[in-house]
Image 1 (tube, rainbow, N blue to C red):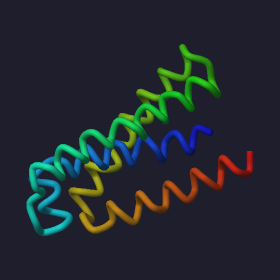
Image 2: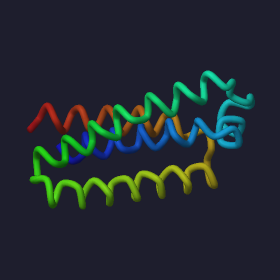
Image 3: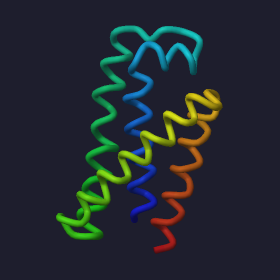
Length: 108
């Protein structure tokens, strides 16, 4: 479950990153509209809360929240390094992490 929680953390942090005009312009070559920025920020709460709930359910509340904060920091680090190195890899990495997380959750 922690791989799925990390995938959700990555997706939530990616949405927050793309809600920023500078990063959105780097990835999509266009500035986001005001509505798109607002929707990205609002939609980012669902995967972030989902990852916190998954970690808390599988590891207990105290350890789960510590692991969740670590996953958030690592997801932010992966996103920032990917933005600095290969901007076009952000979205495919999100799909890859999601696929691996779902496979890990299904396999047990």
